[in-house]
Image 1 (cartoon, rainbow, N blue to C red):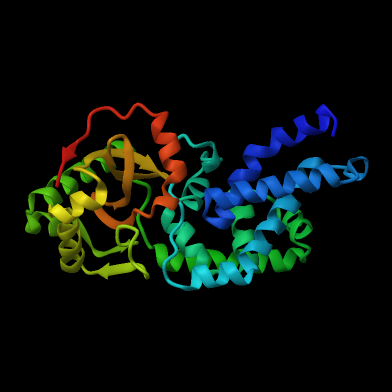
Image 2 (cartoon, rainbow, N blue to C red):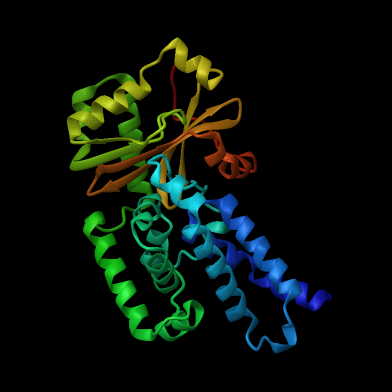
Length: 312
């Protein structure tokens, strides 16, 4: 392959990776999909490719759809233990973040909701909301009609909106203040204050420190507060599992303010906190090592500053 063809692909690599991540919810799988796209680009009759960007977008999208439809993917995602892979702010795979729709499309909450859509609905939603493709362009990418594209995105928007029902975006500074207060209440055992910081319809989902066979879910302020308090309660077993006493840092993960538990420079767990109207609306806790691999790569290149708390 000549250098011009390689350069042309590399110019699109970041956008392709960001698209694949939104479609698959996994950075590792997204990287594999982009590499498969590169292999097909190598083998293609490139003189017949009139618009390389459109060709590459079509190929990577359909590779991702094949992965979503595969028996292995259906089994893994239907087993009840799947959560998106969190990414640290600044990771290029997060992609475009100029509009509210683009930022929301990469949030852990929406990536989780997209699991409930069909693969084609998910692809149409991502292409339209995150990358602003026209219905004509989406029809060409997915080999469907324009009216089908419009119907798919309409259904997807309704399903996502029905589950989201949140207020507008919380600005990062305000969200950080709420999370700092929440963390202080959780670590101190002040359960009443913890309950007061939660919305009436708060939810939490967790992979159980990476050990649970199925996701752990809680609803109602009292149950969520009890679950969170138990998670922050220090025990020798937790210290052994983590390999030491963690320092808690606040960072931005997938557009949300998050609490990171760090031991000896390694992120052992991440809790993304969604803030709405000055309160905690949802929490998503991820500690499975394979889901934190890329976040740890980014963390090692990051200047974290002083931790906001210590525990255990």
